[in-house]
Length: 214
Ligand code: GAR
Image (cartoon, rainbow, N blue to C red):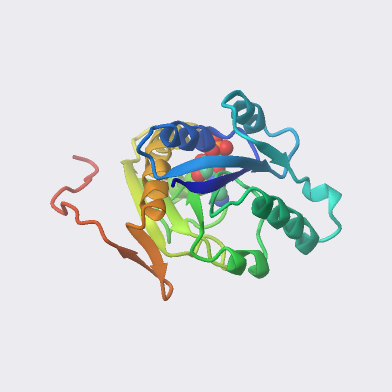
């Protein structure tokens, strides 16, 4: 049986779309059973509806405290029989209570090669620092922001003349293939969290390198 997954969004939802598309393949080990947004105006909600996915809005502004907001989210997730959560541009910081409740079952995509550039404005900061390789990371969520054990990463070169926008676009292409790959790995058990580390059951070819400039 495919694992039941909720995608949590706050905005346009392009990563959500890539997860929905990947999960529509018959052999994919997960199904997107719910898209949940904390913002009623998130553009991704309409895209999820068009794909025939159940949607829910839990507006954080309707809840007096973070805990109250998260209890409401948790109730909807439970109601839909959700087993795994993918944060995809979900821009609310989660409490330890929620993170621990979903420990080993909640992943996030972050637009940098963690542990570099935790937090926001990752592309601006990468350009300011002058790094020549940048990228994206999928990781298990832990209470500390953007600090969880890493499941998968993709790297791209930073090119002379890059702007925040051009760099973001180059990385987003990679996000869209990396996130479905990581969801597949946690859903079929080939990557799992054990004692705070990711244990992989896959083998891979370690000979290739991304070098910039080539
Ligand atoms: C993505 O680039 C994602 O990596 C980033 O927000 C964007 C959401 O785009 N996430 C974070 O910055 C989380 N801290 P999307 O709504 O089109 O998927």
